[in-house]
Amino acid sequence: MNLAIRLTVNGEQREIVLDDPRVTLLDLLRERLDLTGTKKGCDRGQCGACTVLVDGRRINSCLTLAASHEGAEILTIEGVAQGDQLHPVQAAFIAHDGFQCGFCTPGQIMSAIGLLAEGQAGDDPERIREGLSGNLCRCGAYAGIVEAVLDVQKALASTKTERAA
Image (cartoon, rainbow, N blue to C red; front, side, top):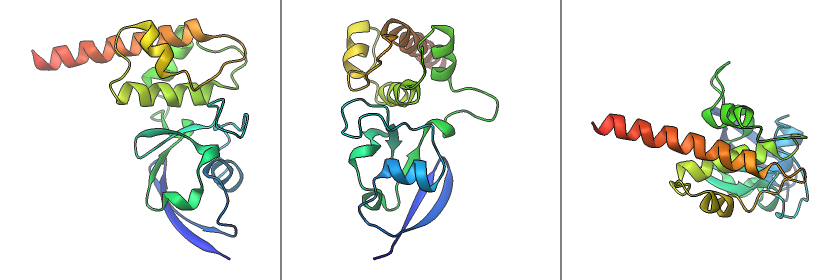
């Protein structure tokens, strides 16, 4: 049974014909669209390596069927930079050593971007740790990850204050 769906992936309209309606969004991204930055870790929604933004919300792409996102806007790690200009969260991860082996990094970055967009980061490291608790790092780079998110949150708060003035 073929099923055609339309998605906007990283700003590009895509029409995809699925030969199996049970394909996950993760497998569609990696295997059909060659967007391999989104990682298949546990394939059970427990590690967060597959985190992407769907209509601005963080999801584990391994747990959702691609067909259920007809018309959705999908943002993956490949779509966050603007040309050669890194997204502020990407730059902060580099500046604060928020990664070691790098396997979890795309999911961590996407989750951090979502957390910041949701306005849930605040300036409390514990709140950030809780907000990112669905993303596991086997190398233990959590201190750098939290510092990176705090840095971006402070920059965003500073920008909002300057605009209000």
